[in-house]
Length: 424
Image (cartoon, rainbow, N blue to C red; front, side, top):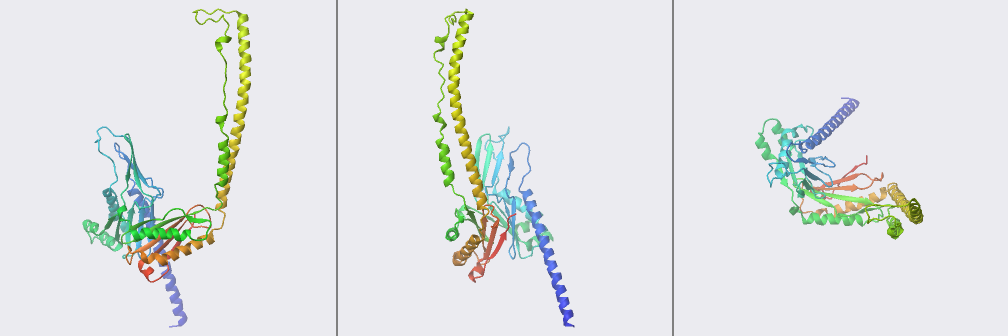
């Protein structure tokens, strides 16, 4: 065959293969977005008349992450302060000890609803990859808040992760597995605080110290990174990096002291009308059931009272002027504080932090390389995952950075996968 013809056929096949990959990727992305909405609906109960209403006000609803070679991870309730609120008083006939709680069984049943009825629609996922749903990951301590006639009570939310391979999902969808058999193939793990692992706690401290050891004046980790460990997936660390460019409270504290010095308590307003009875003419006899007076006497008494009130009014006017001047001074100081705060934040968001972020990522990768081997809790096929959340609105910083590497790749000294999520 003509070599040129072979090359043309090869290019056509390569183009067709690339288009097929793009089509599969688009299909999987579409299926994942739909799955997120389905899970949101499943975990948002319908209101029931006569019962307390359970509301899941998650600020970010359901998040998902697709990891090639591993699968899809749906995270339900990834708000920074997820909570369940149950409001309303006790209905007539309610049992005294009855309460509407979200139990581990409730969460498991809703996850099972997704796996048995909807997971089969993830058609673009390879058979050897898994579908995982996690409820209430350990980020900032999810909680339940009950609002009722008897007061407010707080309860810890259950935390659960469940997963199954796409091959098992396909077998169930094709009728090769009964529902009970399929349910037995789904793995589940209840996450508790007692499962904290010492090597992961130490690694969180290593991440914090490594990042803060950079010579960046602007980017710092203000609190120890949090983590959660999920069996058959790995350990996921969350690092919050804040930027403190141009924001100093020194001037604001100074102005606050000045405002505080404007002590309005120093303005003492007193109006002493004296002894009213001394100015009342004798014609006004309050001990008598009848009042007799002459016009001349009344006119003199009213004139004396008017002169007295005029004097006190002048004094009151002076005090009011002092108050007005001090209030205007306080308002000007408040406007200056507001202006400096706005300027500080604007300055912080205009400084180029690209170089600082690059230094931070170098330190982060060095910590992974030097201390990743100490993570004895991870299996060879499990992942070390780190999410860096960049606070603020600086356009030179991404919104988030995802880093992941398997324990096996750590052992062989391979580089981690890094993905930046740009700001919208």
